[in-house]
Length: 312
Image (tube, rainbow, N blue to C red; front, side, top):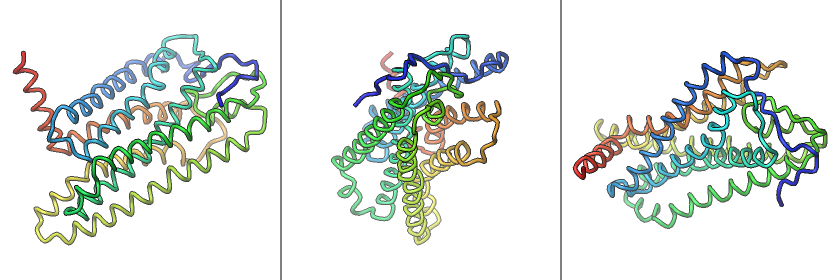
């Protein structure tokens, strides 16, 4: 199946911040800087994880996947959004809209599962330390990460195809800065119940359920840490998962802010600005959190940088 356009709509107009030229000029350098930091920070995490053999562990394998995911997520909408901020021609083709929608859904969904897998990894490392190398072996790491990417991609392709096959009755103004699926569905003049049902099931499976599993993992982790007799031991055990816990709080905090807040009848431009900033800030802060909270990452970065300077 593919999103065949049967509606006569060849392109969509992404309204975004149209009508606020001053705001667009302010957002362009801010979003450009944050996107650049996101690319540099996450690329650095991936390179360090690959180049330093001391980081060839399950924890950093999953962290590398998370960084690649953040690069893909922001790259799915930020470059076009930056172009639209400086242009009066804010259109996107039907096919490009479908691709952007699918990538956004896939990366967001995969991050939910990946954060859950990382919590499970920390649970095994702290609560089952002697069996950890056997339980979280290389094969299982690839299986868990690969399954998350593939399953979420299939789910997102299905949701995108169902949404984009709806009739749009020549309406083409999307009141959003990207081809966000809920904003696009508002343009449909056909029955959207099937699409909405898929989204509801997907959101339940990929938000509350993973969050519950993460919470359960950390309850067990906390119980194990509290049984450690020495304060130094407790501090060392908690430091191995504090960065991941901070990323989880940041990710689910922003999701709650964007999607669980009371909806007003009229859209406010401040809500759109907050949505843009939160969508870019989270991927930008992930590598910062792991760099500041993790001595191994900082030491590995210094080692890689030092070896590059020596080669020169």
